[in-house]
Image (cartoon, rainbow, N blue to C red):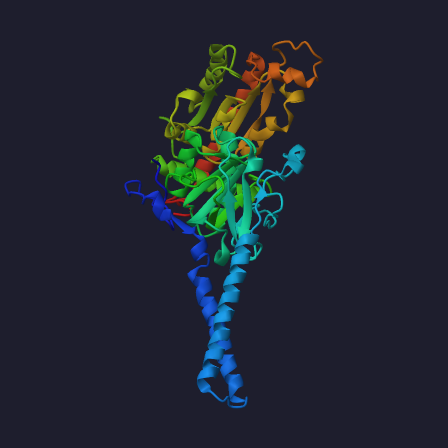
Length: 489
């Protein structure tokens, strides 16, 4: 049985044992529906009323029986307490749960992700991440509560807001900070998973480096209980401990779960300025290198026998869809151009057989990343800033693939890299429909990529010369400052 994190913060030391799941939950039963905070408030209020009545009595005629007067006033105090308890009970019963996936907006799911918690507005300052936080001024001090464990239809899962003093009947209260992630795609693909994680890192930086006790993952309002291995390890590196994915074990479908503090993201990186994204990727890169015991200072000091900075070019190959038709020919072209540059080193690696730390190390040694379009290119942000990327596409993508084909140009810009353009194969499998027919994309999507020796050679030469000149200039201007740690250490 999986164990939950500690109540207030997750230990960063992996050798520490987590307390049992039962210790994490405070169940609000009907017989004890109001919190100690509410009890103190009621007693204080009624005590004030009691005092007020006593002051009034000083100016009133003396009653025939002092004991009767005292009993009468105490009866008023008791009635006051009962009235406020009744009010708290009504507040409990008035909590209204709404579907997490609002089917009214099902045809507009990509337009702001409006179907997830559709009644709520985000907090958004110019250039900052868009988020919701509970409790907050925007929520009027109310906590976020969730209900349902549906993994196939998000409209059966629901959410509500409740005051901490009047949580829904039989609610379970989870202590600590909870990150609630909505992802329109998934948490297995490293690009889509990273996009969902980045806004939480941005919030983490701007909020005293506070880390979550747990994560709750939603896809189309449906619960997900795991991250892909790459994303899970990156999350562990960034936040200082393995992410605990809430599974709501021991909670039935109709039982509400409320959170002492929750942050909800449903727009991925949307709204973030380029400077804020670069700051965020800088932290993730630094944390990943630290986690994998790699240098945080970059690789400008790496030189060859002649004392020239090493320019490292990596061919990051795919197998299967969008791989090169003739790998040896492509490798030969780049080997030939690399050999013409003093200090050039060519490496060939495959994205499907490297561990997380092997990928981090490979990227930390790479100045120029050469790779087909695909999720493996997400690793580019792990290179030193100002490193270069060369991207390759099979036939048909330009007309039919939509804006998604530009994601690695975006991440290059957001993480401080240089996207050096792309090559699109003009040849490939034929489509029986018109060339702009969307049905052709099913044929082109997984196509193989050919090569153009002349174009590849000239392109490689230009990028290599540019990078070599930049590295020589950086080496000449390098300051003595060193990096000893990451932000949020």
